[in-house]
Amino acid sequence: MNKQATRNAISAAALKLAREQGPGGFTVDTLADAAGVSRRTFFNYFPSIEAAVARPIEEFLDGAFSRLDERPADEPIVDAVMATLGGDMGREQMAVLCEVYAMTEDSPQLERMQLQLWNSAQQKLEDGLTVRLGAAAGELLVRALAGSLVACAKAAMRTAADSAAGRNPDPLSFHNHLLESIGLLRSGFNINGINHDPKDS
Amino acid sequence: MNKQATRNAISAAALKLAREQGPGGFTVDTLADAAGVSRRTFFNYFPSIEAAVARPIEEFLDGAFSRLDERPADEPIVDAVMATLGGDMGREQMAVLCEVYAMTEDSPQLERMQLQLWNSAQQKLEDGLTVRLGAAAGELLVRALAGSLVACAKAAMRTAADSAAGRNPDPLSFHNHLLESIGLLRSGFNINGINHDPKDS
DNA sequence: GCCAAACTTGCACACAATGCAAACTTGCCC
DNA sequence: GGGCAAGTTTGCATTGTGTGCAAGTTTGGC
Image (tube, rainbow over all chains, first blue to last red):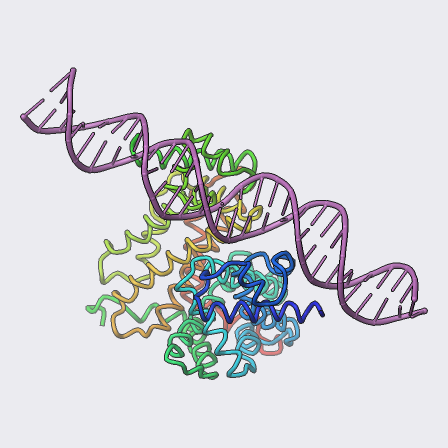
């Protein structure tokens, strides 16, 4: 069996079981069985059940953020992020992403796993930003900006997942939310405008 | 033994061992021994070694973000966050926070644990923001803003930890970095100013 | 058909985590 | 100061995780 095929078989089985029994509702043995491999082989591919379940997220983030290098160097960062993250994505993929994202509620393990994935995406973004911004930008700026951008993406994803709760994987929802949240970030969240003491005006 | 005292004994022992052998460099049995309790008792207090090691972070974040409720309702959010997060903190505590934060390098487990702690801090912040901003603010805004603020705090912490690497727990470093990164956030990171095509100017 | 490389498997082992019921400790009331 | 009740600790048993290792099995090229 091809290595890639095995990997797919495992993560597919993991997703299936997670749907049926909830993430964390089954053991590695069960999963290995369902995927048609031995327990040992499972561990050759994934270090934990959660890693297998979260693979769609990992692939999405990996794909998106490594496409960042291919963007023109003089493109404003925000546009580059929009282009890579918000790029073409099938209804299918979007649905899975939202689904897995939503499973976080039921499994702290899965939640941590996803947090880690987003975190390593942020690190990739920091690398990209460092290159783009050059010496002009301090470490602090790079980190805060990367973190904020990722936070916007997460917010967009979460909100998209919420609206898709009643089974409606709207593929554009994420894209629009992403656009909106990054717009907010761009304007400093109108921080100076909102929540001022009423007597100000 | 008082419950609180046991808790402290355990997390103190955990910190000590983590310093000596690295996080993840020892087993629960060792830790339980060092803390003077049984293995079973350890698990009555913490679900994992990492949770015990990361307790200082947890306490810091819990403390900071629950103080958020006590801030005047008409205070601008950013100021409130600065006041709660950047508030009084001893050299001692700062040093420990940086130390634990830095240990993430050596232990994915510990890294995930801390990510989760920051994440639940973000959720507290979201609740606070929802109250403060009222219906005027959509979910997306609240999430993106909370995420960005937390990202700034993390960036400040990380940068403070970096400068403290050569043993220099500078207590103000974090506060200043926090101030700076939130200033950046406020101005939308000058996104429209930096990294434009050179020919623009 | 054979060989080497790639891949899978079983086994053994150390450790994590939790339920349960039996101990032990503490403070307090009479 | 005996004894009760609540709070706390412990041992034991059990199930599951994750990894090294060495022996299998498959695959493709020659």
